[in-house]
Image (spheres, rainbow, N blue to C red):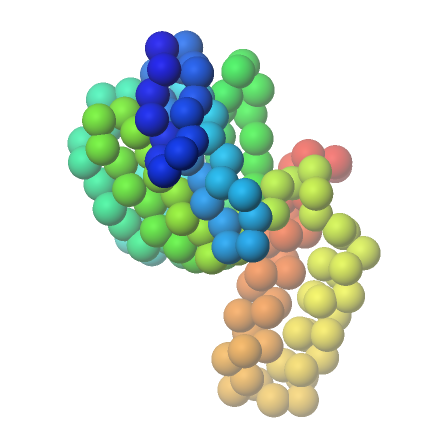
Length: 145
């Protein structure tokens, strides 16, 4: 089946969901999927064929996609998800697939953020950086334990 996955992007898929993933600074990805599990601000949403219309802001958490019989994990850092008629559009502020996470860099970011918090417990930027680093390390560990 052929579906329009966004401006100028066509995807051929036998999967029931047509997914488009857009991240600033990267090309748009379009693919078919059996389901998508997104970390929305109001909780996780597992999107399967026939899901109701949805538009929700995304939080910081694990994005899980089941496509082509494989499961893909990514560290997702904000954005929005829109679901219409078995078409899922994810606009992510930042996203790193598990197999692309630089564990050494994530550990350094974790250490730096923890040190900043030791010096200033009220540093909300350090708290957010620590959450992002912890998420990246947790996602990477699920793929490469």
